[in-house]
Image 1 (cartoon, rainbow, N blue to C red):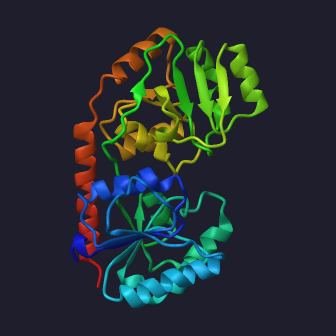
Image 2 (cartoon, rainbow, N blue to C red; image 1 turned 60 degrees about the horizontal axis):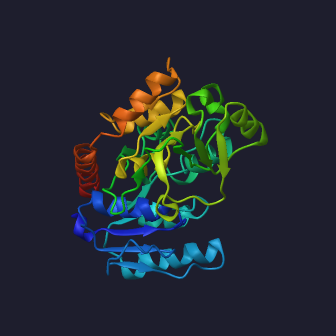
Length: 322
């Protein structure tokens, strides 16, 4: 089956998926039949993208999508960009032509109930891993999985890279572990950290290092207009990355990893990306020199190579659908 027959459904459609969905379309070179979303995404200005009204309950939501797949796209390949694990078993009659893209649906270590649920209901579902570690984890659990990769886009709204004496760094993921940054706070003396997750203990440590912390409930690259010096990644999960890395690459903003787990995910998902690893032996002078060099990087070739591989892998998987 060809990409131009593909029907894409972002079942959950969180507001943070706008950049991801745009990147997904770009990675496919704009080749797909229809896309359905449940959130208003202004940048997805394409007549093939349909915004559906979000039902009141998870059950109604699942039944609406099931009806859409069964009646309107009975012979088309369907890719679920996100899905509700509780109700995915309802789609088993259509598993032969459904692909499911992984976000937080891959069980972490110790998530026994989730593991048992998936062993019972999703072993025949074709799943597409966003990170190599997801593919390895799902393979260990005897799930049907292929590593696809994580899509990138050339941002249409470039962010300004900070050059002032008081630069701003983003610690944007709600799943961040800010305390992992504490040993390195002296590197950020005189700067501002904008964060979605920051405990009183972290804020106190930051103040002692002369680092200002600006906590925000909502943070989007394209809404705040920050002059950004870097995006800091401290996500502790060994199998999940952060979409903020993708956004940083697309916006030519330096990526800074503060944990070994995030470093491994970034380096394996985007081989060739030069990013800053704080958990090595880094002093302030070396950090600033590396940051200065990172601002000069052109990610165009990396984005193109990443998306070619992404598209090729998806085409191969589509060819296997019956």
